Length: 130
Image (cartoon, rainbow, N blue to C red; front, side):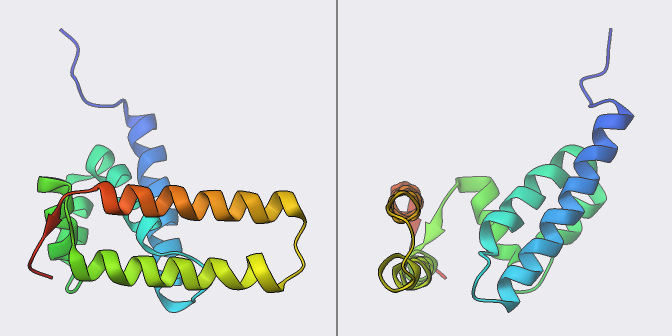
């Protein structure tokens, strides 16, 4: 009977993808232009399928570790995180849409992506603690 684990090549690819996403997440937390949270969640998904040790390490990071643990166990997002994510997303999207002179298709694309992300965030279960 074959093992349910991913082959070594796939695990290495997932681990490399997790490292890239983790670096992009760190960059996203430092720069207002790049969103950090989606990359952090993607890194978690890659690590959970490639390296249990690295996955546990990310879950233990101060600040984001408890939030990620709740995300993995419940799929929930606390109210403060939802509000902050929404404010940040709307702020970062509004300026380019209305003031940068983008082509209409780019404005619609940015607006629809923002709307889809907001719907996703607010459709997740909420919890009271931050």
